Length: 269
Image (cartoon, rainbow, N blue to C red; front, side, top):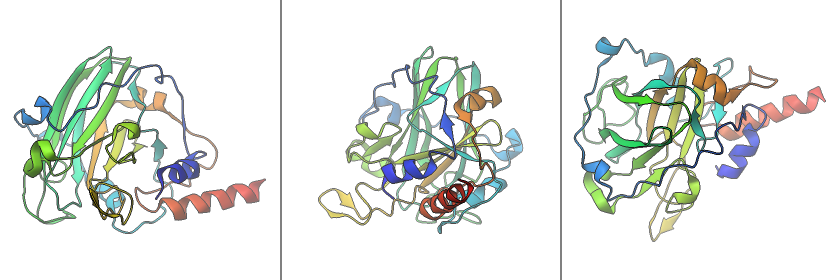
């Protein structure tokens, strides 16, 4: 879906407070950045963290559906600011990609840092959407991002097939203007009082486009899906619910759910 259309469909489902718009994002990570060469941070399994990924697997469906009463709100992925200090963690939910993707983050503002989160985003076995090679991760695996001070702006970056392509890979982040194809490659939602749900599209180019660098993208944003724990106070500061909170949306199926929301609003007027 065209990212501008997706934004207009969701405008009444959630509103960003704008409190962090003044924090400049960190410089985009290049495909040759040294962060990608860092060792894989310690991965903690569900038995160690107590994290349960099962309730979130329904948001990586291959076919789009509207999901009522899920409590999720779409956020502006370019403004993932933290108002309060918090020890941030990231959890792997699922991946639907043939690529061996990688995930890193940066933080600008009060906390200036960057780091590798997942060096090989691949899983195999029961529950995994894809099984095209690699089994580095199990569903629900987590890593520690570290303490991020209030007044910081988080950015997340996916190096598409970075494990194989390395410095020749495309890197896609929260700032659409910085993506090589000029397209949105990340959607973000607020969940369960303290989580950000991030869904990435890893293929270069517009939907179905081929030739040149274009990779016949399906634009489904389920190639790598994560939850990031930013804490209840920080998520509350980002999300401002407005009327019709029971109408919520899955990562895919933006169009149908958005049209449903608009119809309801029209009847209410």
